[in-house]
Every structure is written in structure tokens, then in C-alpha cells.
Image 1 (cartoon, one colour):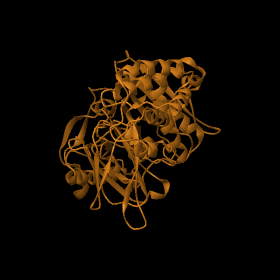
Image 2: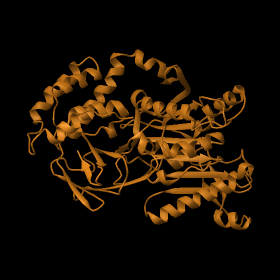
Image 3: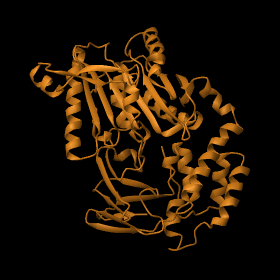
Image 4: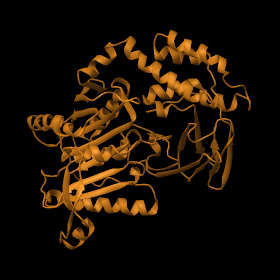
Length: 450
């Protein structure tokens, strides 16, 4: 979760428009400062005393330098990495999650793709879930040629062991540690799961979407989760035709129809695929064994749902790791549609926006136009925070904000301190924004931005 300081207001209104930006000659001195500081927290302390203001030509250089400096903390202080290497992740005081990690192949230039597999089981004895976890440690492994394969142990032994509050905190923390410690490509992290793990994928994908590139749900139940937040997260839904416990088979197709409807309303978004495996029961969905894995799937799942007649089946490549690996995350989509009631526990962030905990029960919509350096926001209650990034906004020009018939003008002032703070808080180089803008409506109904 991001936390914000008063530096934002100072940057917006305490500086004059056109103030000199960070000279290129200053970059070398700044890089020396990054190397000399004993820790990344010391970097932030130094910037708090003397901030630097990158311009549009140096932002990417500064961001990469900050990210590499953050990673160097783990070289200078290897004990901070030790628990991760032992398969442990402390996600809350006195609470530690367990996971297995296996690496295959040579590390690509941009880092390893990461495949996360959630095990089955659920409500039952610890021994049952331990056995399911042991199976998942090998389940998708043969389908991966190059990458990191992680199998977390659900933190509890309840029916919702992959998505209760503990699980949400665990997996959110684990993703950050994977980016920081494992040599991962932050834009190629994939979530997969079977049975209770499929339940987890349904529930976690709409909450973790900004950190993921794609997801596969196999043989699970959605338990009523909203699909609105899957706008930018490709999803593969797989189930056996005969997997009728809890109506998993029918509910998988019904959920696919919800995604069909959203994809029709918003062309190009809500990418998804539904595979109903012909004649398959709960334990026989062929969602692994590499790109050569094929399954017989119903040609028209919706007609089957409506009539109960399977009809024709066709051959499809149904390997989950191969399907998800086609996609790369876009951390800065130009439009966001966020059901803020469906989010990680105690988390306020969604891609490049945030809301407060009290502002959850609404769907927030924003649109950025890089071509015109404009931002449009649908009316909302509470406070909305916009995290500016050069992928969406030109820092050398004013940003025009339109909301409920009102027009506001913002003058960007990139801050290296803000970049360092947001990078440390998100542990994600993509979300190291150089300025945060607060937007809210006052008692008279006028929107304010600062």
C-alpha cells in the first residue's frame, strides 16, 4: 500500500512553472550518491534533504538506477534475502507463509518469467493440504522450459485457504519478494491454480491484476466474485464437462459469459478463453504437459449450458503455462475500470490510481490520453490519487483534467524522491511514479486537485 507525504503538495504549488529540471550533468553525481548511500532508506533520507527533478529525457534512466540500487540492498545485506531462499515469506507480524521455488533455463535479459501454481484441497486436515501442496510443486513444472515456478502453501486449512485475508496478504507480499529477490521479469508473472487453487485464481486475479500478466483457472468455483477488474488481465477458464460438484462446470461457462458481455461492451479488453473438457471429471482437466498437450473441448460451451447437450468437440492446446505465457503485462493501460470493493485487504492501489479505505464501495473509471496530455475522471466520492508516469503523461506540459463538467489544470513537477518512495512501497519499478496528484470534491460539489 502506498503512503504519501506532503512533498506532493510542495511539488505542485511550491515551485514555479518552468523551474529548471535535473541537468544531465547532475545524473552522474546522483548515481554516485545512490552508490554511496548504505541502504535504499538512506537514499530516501538524502533525497528528502535535497531532491532532484528529472526531466522527460532522464526519467527512465533515474528509475532504472533506483531499481538497481534497491536490488543492491540484497547484495549488501544478504541476510534480508535468506528467508526467501529458504521458502519463507513473512507477510504479517508472527505470520510466515511457505512456498517452493524452482528455476529452469538460463535467465533472459529482462528476467525470468514467473509461474505461480496454487494447490487444491481446502477445508480439511493439514495433512491433506500438505499432500496437495506437494503435488502442486511438480504439477506445472514439466510445462515450463525457462522460468521460475513457485508453489505457495495456502496459509490456512480452510475452504478459502488461497484467498482469505491471510492468503491475500501473503501472496501480495510474495509477489514483491519475487520481483526483488528472484531475478524475475516484473511484466511476466502468471497465476494458475487447480480445484481449490482454481477458487483462489478466481478470487486473487481481480485483486492482483496490476501485478500479473495473465491467469489460468482450472476446475474451481468463482464464488460470486465480480469480473469487472479483469479488464486488462487475460484469463483462461478450464473445467471438466462432468465436474458438477458445486456446479463448477456450469458456473465456469456462466462466468465466461459475463466476460463475453464485458468484452462486447469494451472492445479489445477482457481477453479470455473458456475450455470445457469433453467427458472430463474434476481431476482430469488436461491443463499441463507443455505446448504439445491437447484436450478435447466442447465447441460451443454456451449451447451446452443452455441445452445440456454437449454437441461437437474440438482439439485445443490446453496447457496453462503455454497459454498464459503469450501475454506481457501493461502496467499503464490508458483506461481503468475498477470495482474498488473487490481489492486486496488493506490495499488502496490499482494500477496508477489509489483510493482511501473509506471509498471502496464504487466503480471508479478514469481515462488518460497521452496524445493530448489529458485525464478524464468519472464522478466519484471520497478521494482519488493519480500516480503520474511518462507512459501516460508528458511531464513537460500541463495536464488537463476533466471531471463532471469541470476542467482542472495540473503542472507536472517530477520528483526523484517520489519515485524512490513509490518504488520502495510497491517493490515494482513500473509503479515508481514521479508525482502523485490528489483529487476530491469539496462540500459545495467542486472538485479540487493538488
